[in-house]
Length: 308
Image (cartoon, rainbow, N blue to C red; front, side):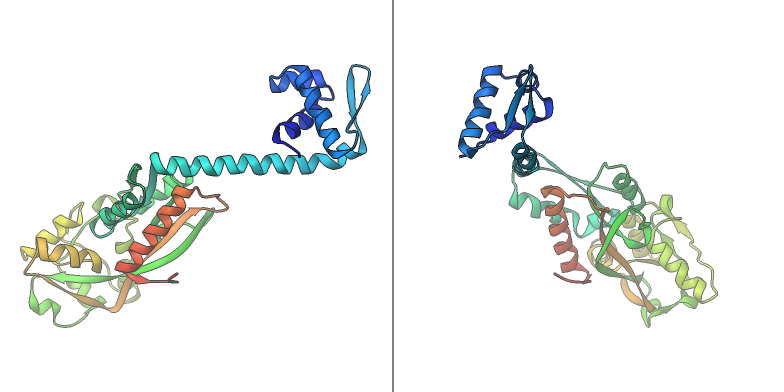
């Protein structure tokens, strides 16, 4: 029966053209390499090398055998790597990118999903804004992420939409919620908008800009803040209205602005979220796990796209 040790010695001898040099490369004693090659020849019933001076020359049988031996050893190495990946998944660190507002209705639940499967793992959810996460993906600091599609340039990236979330108009004034909000009404509204640092690239603002421009209107805001919680609190005080994802509204209004409500835009507007990773990347078991769980979590909260 062939052994991994025999195939390793065979390939080293083939490549080095010498039993002595093969032994040096492998860190074995030369008699050990010779013994393994002889045992392989005996097992196969063929001659693999002919002695020429101080070296050896492969026979036609050895030439034929070489690519098969390489495939066997490569498969064994891949198997060992796969097992090591699973082992590290159980006790190592999992890093996954998420768009910032996901923390409100998917972050903690997603981490709980991971720990339910792998209690010993360390989890890092990375990202305040989708554009920063994309840069981490491009630089290889992250394997995969769930991001707003509008923030991702697809060049060099695989982008798979999995869910969409409606953008809704929130207000503490009942008369502002009597009917869906048109672009004309939106352009006249007194708005507080979050994500001020990322205002140029924020997906929600990009969608609203497009909606208003199509109606010949210009977007504007009265108040700029960094986080959506502050925006919702200001809405609850009646100082301004806002537009945020529906999932965030359903989570935050009861807690931070119990007197406020929400209504759709007209036409309805959506943020689309996608799984993103570098094209042709071989994803680790950890990345595949996070993609599975993040997709399931988002599709349970938002409207699924291509549900599995």
